[in-house]
Image (cartoon, rainbow, N blue to C red):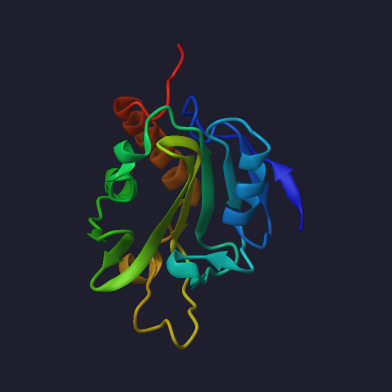
Length: 198
C-alpha cells in the first residue's frame, strides 16, 4: 500500500487535508483508525483503488481501479446525534447537485443511501457515528461513486452502472469531489455540524 499527500480542494474544512492512497484495503477502516487518533477535522481518505471497500450492511463495494470515487470523510460534529437524522440523504443531495451543476445530468436518490440512474445504482453512502450518549465522538462518511468505470462483475451488471456508461463521456473525479466538498461544507455550516473560522 502506497500513500502520498495530495491537497487540492478549496473548502475550508471538508477535504482541506487529504490522505491519498493508490491502493488501500478500505477507506472506512483507515478513517476509523485515524479518527481514533484525533486527526484533523474534515480529513479525507481518498483511494484510487480499494481491495475490500465496505458498503451498507457490511456488503463489499466493488470499484474499478483508477476509474471511480472512493473516499471517507472524518468529522467531529458540534451537534447532537438526533440532529443528524437526515444526514445520509442530505449527503446524497450534495453529490447529485454537484454532478448536475458540473454536467447538467440529473441522478435519482433511493432512500436511504443510494444514488441511482435508470433503476441502476451509481453510488452509495455509508455513515457511521461513534458517540457517547447524545455526544458525538466522531462521524465517518464513506462515499463510493461509479464515475468512469465500465467493467462490473457478472452479479452486478444488471443492477449497477456508472456515469460514463450512462452518458458516454469522461467525467472529472477531481471536479466532482471538489464541488461536493464545497457544497457539503456549506450544508455542514448551516446545520451547525462544523464551525468555519474566518
